Amino acid sequence: MIEWYERCGLVLNGQVVKTPVVIASMAGITDAAYVLTRKEHIGAAFIGGYSIDAETMEASRAMAAAGREEFVYDDPITELKEQIKALEGRGVLIGLNLRGSTPASYAAVAEEIGDGVVYEIDAHCRQPQMTALGCGEALLHEPHRLAETVRVLKALDVTVSVKIRAGVADDDRQLARLLWKAGADILHVDLMDFGYARLRQIRNACPLPLIANNSITSFDRAMDLFAHGADMVSLARRSDERTLAGIDAAICRRADETGWYNAPKQLCRGGDIRSLAFCCLPVKHCPLLPFLEKVGLTREEYMEIKTRAVADTPLAQGKMTCFGSMAWCCKSSSPCMLRGIAAKEGGLSDQEYMRLKRQLADKIMERIFDGMPEEDAS
Image 1 (cartoon, rainbow, N blue to C red):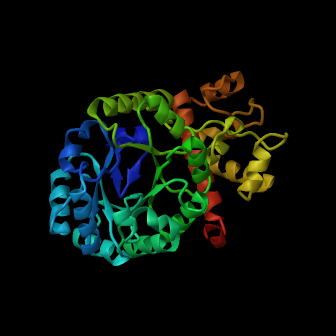
Image 2: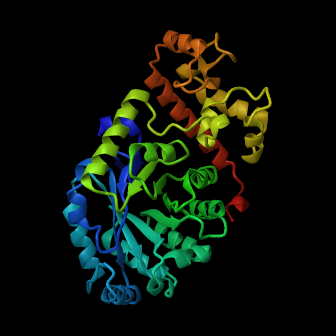
């Protein structure tokens, strides 16, 4: 587990996640048996979707009768407990993708099952039998109801993920902030056809761990999403063992070789908020200045945040660099003789340098989002 943490730094629901590769829910398909045949190549799995009250279970039966694959059962609690028991101790973070007609339905499940799993609110399903009940994608048109379900679950002190479909809500950025402020722990985003540009917008709007979903078929596709804000990627229809194994192995190699598997692009090349860790002093006209204004930072505040964040770390060294400290230096993948000299004098490998930059990015995000006014989450 120490090796897993050092490689990717992922901890969710108090559990170290061994790889940022996730199996997404597929109703009638993704259950414990499906996950167990793929467990060596994933860090988390969201089983389901499972309908959890009389109304949604009846909708599932109607959908199954019409030929759609669904999980159909009489007692949701017994079924979920059996699925969880089969997955316990297998090294995979367990998530339950659930469809309920009221917040109380989700609370009833959480009260019975406890805090050993992640509860994922399905605001993604677009089957008319479910949306007619106000479930699935219908929740994206009434975000206050979705936020209320988050609050009800968080009152039980459990970890909450929300699965959304991009482009359905009026503004995905506002939705992300609303869910974050309501207490959500994870945002699982089906990007549809919007791609990494929409992901970057969501990343810049909230600090939640982001799982990016849609057409993840290769390591290159995963890297595009990692470079624009994703912490993890999820696969559904392409979650066959061969694809999962290839992506997992490539990500692990990148993590070991670079020190930061999901390092963002630099801001001037389209990077997200995390790329402030690579920006220099705000002394010239470049994308940094309008971005600082956008996130509500003055130049002086930005300089103060980074200076404090690197204090007593090796990044505070580097008097021979352009601005007297490696706090202002770029990515290790960008050739720079002065940064290289400073890192060598500080005893830093490229991997150690990038791990420190990842920690710097986390501190910058924490300061920015902690200072965000409550009204910005509306």
